[in-house]
Length: 221
DNA sequence: TATTCGATCTTCT
DNA sequence: GAAGATCGAATAT
Image (tube, rainbow, N blue to C red; front, side):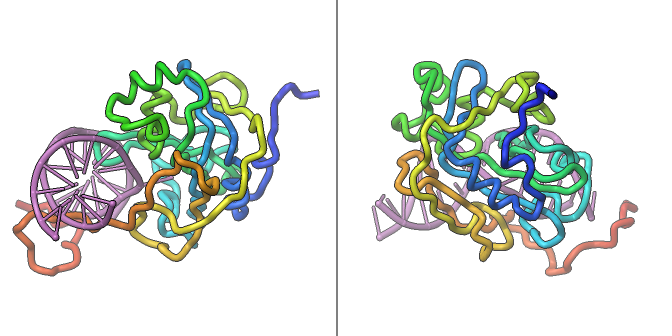
């Protein structure tokens, strides 16, 4: 009946977002003339039990897409200059998403190389969440668009071949929940990004008194 | 080869 | 006002 495409990972409940993440390995994402095969992803739930998730404090203007229906992109900007994308999972109303961390360029290689002149080799073209976005030429305009019905700039397709063994470990760059092994990657794949432990933010030399945080209506001058 | 640091700005408190 | 699901160049060893 319905011509609407539905994939298995879309029907998993929010609490099974880690399973959805595993299932998405090997899938292909195409946009703007380049296709990438996903080799590394991370799961985020934000159901209150996942402090590393953007959604764990509840709905905000930014993370609202995470609470929406599965199969759409949640794109956010990080450090004022990079964009990263998640594929929303889980039922509508409950936050769950899979961060796309790395991939292998399987089509549009020439274009990908032009978009990533800094890459040392082809394996490094999309070896990182922001690099992946750059290769696909996606930005905030892709936020809240579908990847399953062709209505948005990016389209997701099932794996051409079964991915090999999958490994799991702690997520990269998060400032909490280091013990949750929700980063998944295809074992031995050269395009998987290097693991970086949480890097404490460097503060200006001037350290204020170790007071936690000022009262929030202290806006007087 | 490993580690450190600067760039740059949106979002939330 | 401060932190942040990063990248790439520079520095240290």
